Amino acid sequence: RNSEFIASFTANLYRKNEFRGQQERTIMMHILVQLHPLPVGGVYGSSI
Image 1 (cartoon, rainbow, N blue to C red):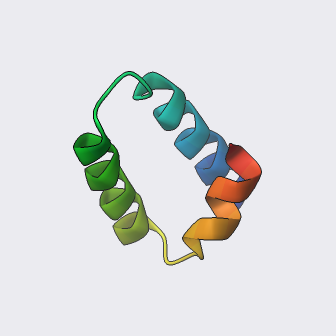
Image 2: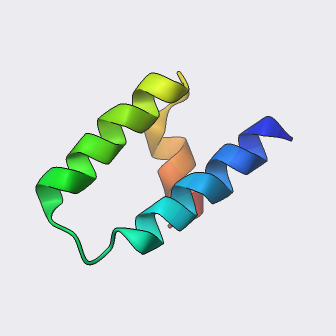
């Protein structure tokens, strides 16, 4: 399903970018919010 793909996609993205700075993380967050209009807390809460 699409939402499951997005959840795993964001989780993988976060793991890959864990060594990066907070600024880049914030940029990634904004990009992801642009990609799908879901409540961010729900997606990241279940992914992390």
